[in-house]
Amino acid sequence: MFPRIQTIATAVPPIAITQHQVRDFVASALPAGLPPRIAAIYDTTGVNRRAIVQEPQAYLGTPDFGERNALYLAAGQQLLEDVASAALAKVGLEPAQIDAIVCVSSTGIATPSIASQMLSPMGFRADVMCVPLFGYGCAGGVLGLQVAGDLVRADPERRVLLLTMELCSLAFRFGDLTKKAIIASTLFADGASAVVLTAEGDGPALGHFAQHTWGDSRAMMGWDVDTLGLGLILSRDLPAFVASEFAPVVDTFLDKAGLTKADLTEPACHPGGRKVIDALEAYFDHLPDGLAATRDVLADHGNMSSPTVHFVLERILAKDESGPLLLTALGPGFTGAMGVLHR
Image (cartoon, rainbow, N blue to C red; front, side, top):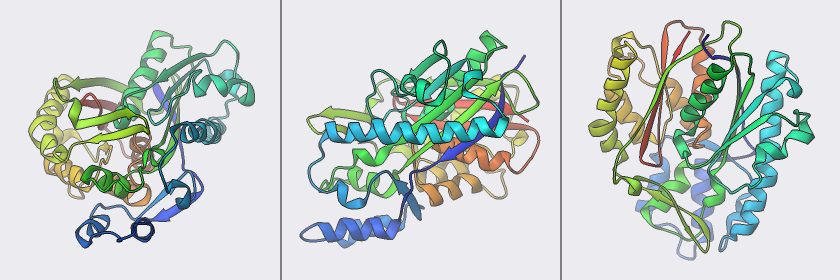
């Protein structure tokens, strides 16, 4: 029996901010403002608005990692409880009916895991399996699905709740005007998702999944850990990498899954940024409307790291189309994540 997606729920924090507000806030808080060439970057990323976990003024000054991680634990758990409750309500399940929780998050440190801290407040059973996944970053939405699906395959009676939560804004370092820091401030945002998977019903079935990690590629994406906490590693060469390295890997993946690009309707791709979407659209050149859902999610929510591909997937599944559906994401490692859903 195949693992099947019974429902998807998504959520963002209540504080919304437009891209122009971000630009103007950063400019007003710097003594000399933003140089015009840097200010212009905010208008070219494809992001219109985002949600963040605290008011903009709270990001000023030198970050205190302890304080920010405490916020990650408290606000992150609340966001996860809200989105988990929404997903379970959609399928008429109580928390006590869930047998395993896979929780993906890489923007804070939680030991014990946030999932384990949710058990008593939400009414999950004490013997529910908790599987925290850290370090997947933007690839976590796809790789988390793979892990959750494998748990269902191992025991078809098992009901699995997959959670993703990232508070990317907590890694913002005010006053850092390096190119990667500016790009981060124009792209990244906060959000969460919840997916219920079982072997029952007629929801989209998980087919072939895979990941590919390139050697000597740590400098592409990830975290540096220093006295301020988590510092972003982000290469400007990602779009070129998609064309030269990721595209052949997707070709091989599709071949192993018995598919070609011509078999696919619009895939659910983690957006990364506008230039990454451009590179992905060049690969999926058979699609008349390109990656419309991926672009729309980037515009409406920014790059929320691991949950973002679930926001895209939710929109695509709402179209009620049939046929195979490809999921892709790129994350630290440097790692490509791919999966196929059969609708």
